[in-house]
Length: 237
Ligand SMILES: C[S@@+](CC[C@H](N)C(=O)[O-])C[C@H]1O[C@@H](n2cnc3c(N)ncnc32)[C@H](O)[C@@H]1O
Image 1 (cartoon, helix red, strand yellow):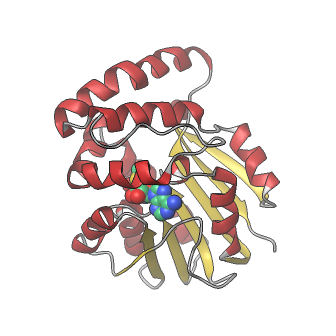
Image 2 (cartoon, rainbow, N blue to C red; image 1 turned 180 degrees about the vertical axis):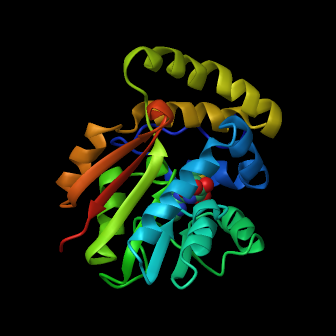
């Protein structure tokens, strides 16, 4: 690993300095690498989220850890009358979001959002919560800025159940970092990705976390056999 040290696990979360540095390094290739490695599935996952959010008819949407803006741009398309704001603590990633047409962006730490309580109808986090220092704190802070009756939606990687689990974990740890390393020259960042997916709560474990932070009507939609999942909760302050 170059000048950035591999993080120690922090109570289930990730070291923010490592995460910021890793995303700054892969920012220029992030969008293409995602589409190649997921064979375009990530595009369909974000479209599904876009349809779900549009059905709630929100006026104010916050996309936390928006990165290069993939989900926020989809939300802009699907909810043309809504205000869509994307925040991230990595300026290199946000620069791409702006360049790609995301209207409202702001540098902000997801664990200390610079917004008053209940400011948004919907908060989304796609592939971001897993990278945070403390998952429960990330969920709590996201829920804090959602109005009563509004929605918090998490899209992230998960582990499939049953016979698919073992080969998938092998692919994640052994194959994916090699391929991604060739494309991005940042193999370490993808070894980190594999480890972070292994440790992140999947399925019912995530629903339990939603309940712990007080989210209501928690539900879970596995995607492509469970390699990713959408989790939704309703906020009640
Ligand atoms: C895998 S990218 C996901 C980007 C985008 N949401 C997407 O769907 O492609 C994860 C993003 O989370 C951001 N991130 C991680 N921890 C964060 C935190 N504590 N505050 C703000 N952004 C954070 C990283 O900077 C990175 O841009």
